[in-house]
Amino acid sequence: MRNAMMIGERVYLRPVETSDAETIAQGMHDETETFFESGRIPLSPIGLTQWIEGLYKQQPSSEIQFAVCLRASDEIIGTVGVTGIDWINRTAETESYLSSPEHRGKGYGPEAKHLLLEYCFEYLQLEMLSSFVWEPNTRSAAAVRRQGYQPAGRIKSRMMQDGEFRDMLAFDLSRDEWLEARAKWRAD
Amino acid sequence: MRAIYLMGTKVYLRAMIESDKECGIAWFNSGLPLSGFGNHYPINAAHAETVLKEENSGAWAMGGNRRYAIVRNDGDEVVGSFVEEANYPTIARIGLHMAPMLADADRLQAEALSLVIPWLRDERQFRLVQIYLPADQTETIAAAATLDMTEVVRLRWHVARPSERVDLVMYEAVNARWAGVHA
Image: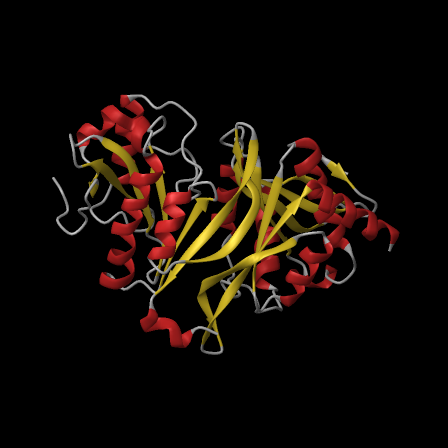
């Protein structure tokens, strides 16, 4: 493992490096799903490199991102992170993206997300987390519910699908709710 | 300088001006200008001047946030700021921030919201106007209801107060002209 910060059974989280930009960009070019709020967009590794550089310029940062890597091969298969960290109110918004479609549906995503949530609640001592999912992305909505997130409402979105604006679904999560969900996930 | 179409009985709104650097505490909100959380850090005149120049680097501030001062009618004291996110052409995400230690902050903020919503929704005809408000800002929330804004999201315990945590609530104003195209 390389520079690991949170270690699970099959995946680990490490700081995202500028050398990951090419891999992340390639994953976006290989995207098979269309249910993201901004649609499928093949981002440039040039811009992704600058984004990664920016993550470390301010400490403590308002955004933290991890590369999700397979323990068996060190291959990066996606990213998980928190944005909009409010260090006074101790809140943040979580996000995750498995950029390699061939690695989806194998349980790597939930394992990485639980490592991220452990980092948020146990290391950063955040009090509450939120997550926003575009309504057509039913897979992510189901995933965050399994991770313990509670429905918090819906926001009208700027994006359309099939000629109609679709909502963003809001969720929030407390530490206790996450612990309960993780225990259930481990038991399963 | 006053915007004649953004005048209330207690406050008015105007663009930021150079002398506002002297009262950065009143209008600056650190980090998350649309969060509704307010400011927790000091800002001196030199840094306030830098912020003002950065936020007004072009006439239209496109691609960023556009900030306006909330000013008390009586005495022209800057008491807060209103921020309009300029990223999306049909949605106005806004934030209100009031100066710390103001006894009537919630009341003044409520009037500022009452000036802003008709301007954005009815005059400029944004499809949506969205704002986060801490649930204990009762006068502003009452104003939101009067303005036909509805609660659409409630993030539990997202705001830290000295002895408790309170919810953070998003209110949304929908422009009726656009209502038919929503799913």
